Length: 175
Image (tube, rainbow, N blue to C red; front, side, top):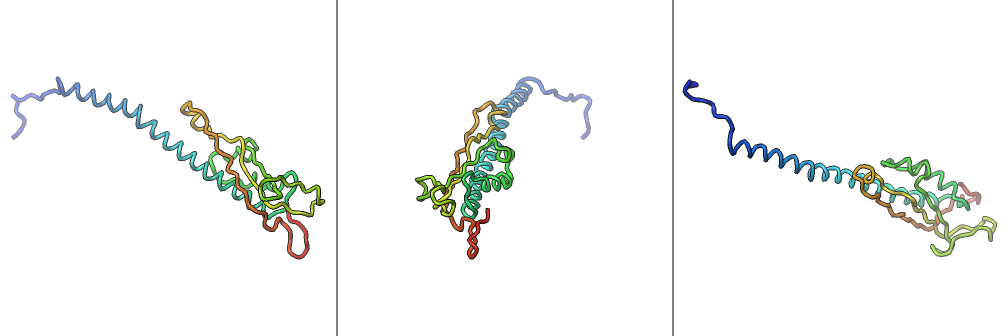
C-alpha cells in the first residue's frame, strides 16, 4: 500500500518530545559530572602508578650501580650514572636536571652508622649503600583538576656492597 493522501504524518509532540529532551539533558549531566572526570582520573592514576614503578626501579638500579663501583665521599659517580640513566617516564627531566633529589648514603655497619673513609685513607669499603629520591611530587592532578600534588615516597633501596669497584688482581678501583 502506498502513501495515502488522507493520512498525515504525526509530529512528535506532547510527552515524547519532553522525554527526548530530558534524556539528552540527563546524558549531558552524567557525561560532564561522572564519565569525563572518571576517564581523566583513570588516566592520571595510571600515569602516577607508572612513575611510582619507574622511581622504585630507578633507586634499585642506582643502588646496584653504587654497590659494584667505587665509593666516593660525594657520590659523584653514582649521581652521574643515575642522572644519565633515568628510565623513560613522564617527569624524566625532573630527575635529570636535579629538581628531584637523589640521595646516596654509605654505611659501615649494615645501615646504622654512616660510613666515613677518612680513618682508613680510602682503602676500606663501606658495608652497605642506600639510594633514595627526595623532593619529588606528582603534579598532574594539581595542574589539571586543582587537586593537591601527590608526594612520592623516597623509595629507599639498601643493598650490601659487592665488589665496590675493586678489580680482583690489581687492587685498583673502577669508578
